[in-house]
Amino acid sequence: MDVRKFLIPKKILLTIIFVSFVIAAFFLSREFSLNLSESFAKDNLVPTELSRQSGIPPEAGKEALYWLDAGQGKARCFLCPRQCLIPVNQRGFCRARKNIKGKLYCLTYGQPVARHVDPIEKKPFFHVYPGTESFSIATAGCNLRCKFCQNWEISQLDPESVKVAFVSPQDIVKEAKETGAKTIAFTYTEPTIFYEYMLDIAKLAKQEGISCVMHSSGFINAEPLRQLAKYLTAANIDLKGFNEKYYSSFCEGSLASVLNSLKILKEERVWIEITNLIIPTANDSDEDIYNLCLWIKDNLGPDTPVHFSRFFPMYKLLDLSPTPLKTLIRAKAIARKTGLHYVYIGNVPENAGEDTICFACNKLLIKRAGYTVLENNVIKGKCKFCGAKIAGVWE
Ligand code: SF4
Image 1 (cartoon, rainbow, N blue to C red):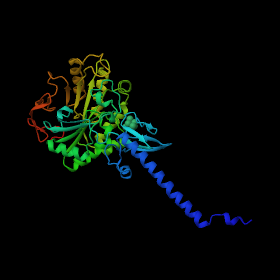
Image 2 (cartoon, helix red, strand yellow):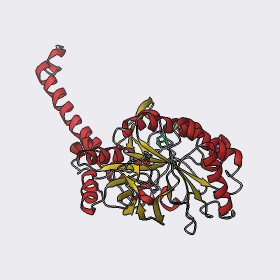
Image 3 (cartoon, rainbow, N blue to C red):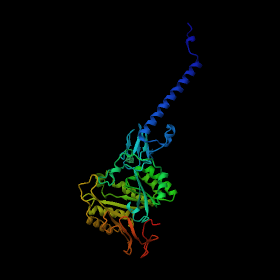
Image 4 (cartoon, rainbow, N blue to C red):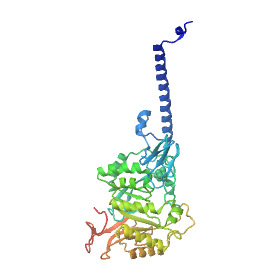
């Protein structure tokens, strides 16, 4: 028997294979596209490049900067010293970065949970445009776990658990301009958590002639910090204590990383002010305070303003007492003894510890009551009385 008559002609066979391939490809791509759409819709994440494929308009979330594919679908984040290794569908320690299908996304992009106009003194900055207002923003999340956190209600949340409308960087800059604010401040929570959002806002703000400032823990890696520093005028860094044991047990952070960030900001010519929250029995020893001040003087210079801030029982440290005023006065005396020129006491309204005094002639330069500037004798960056140059960002 001639079996060749039962064989399908080659041309028809090729056509059948081709048509099958096209049909399979159609259904596979549809399935893939649906999976993407569902996943991003659920997570409120529609990255721009994928939104074009899925047809869903971009809203919140953006592919993160500073991460690498670590193999097997895992992502390694390099934004902060924690350098989390994040498996698919998991998030980093900060809760703000999530691995979706092998890519790392920043969940806080365009999701400000706070937008307020504050006096710049509230950040606190005492040597940056005194008496002006600062358009201040924050998102949820944090890469530290400070037991004394003042903003724990938002810093310790998953970003998507707070539903807010998407606000673009353009809208933030526009709003800031409309309020007449001199600066935009990244503050309240840790700005590293919304790094990509902050960077985009800062770039736009610079084009529009608005300065940007941040209040940060300084727990960030060198490369992203240098990139950000190009667009920052000033940074107030929480130097929370001066020993590693304190940093690890009270904050789950590391002192060495923060000191490194401070040196980088100095190199990048960002104006620096330091805040040190003094907590009774935790970080209030003379030795720690002395070492902290000496390090600041030797590495950042004697003109670096230091704000010693009073602690009030908060979050997980409800069993401790508020910092006694005498401890803050003692800290100020130690700081002055090490040679620091500008030392302030914060969170104590009845004390005159927030006034700026000329380091050269000892006369009153800036008188403050709370966050209000009552008198300013710094003229073009100099003391009105003796002409000494007063370090800061004045005009
Ligand atoms: S930014 Fe977040 S995800 Fe990245 S290393 Fe730090 S804690 Fe981990």
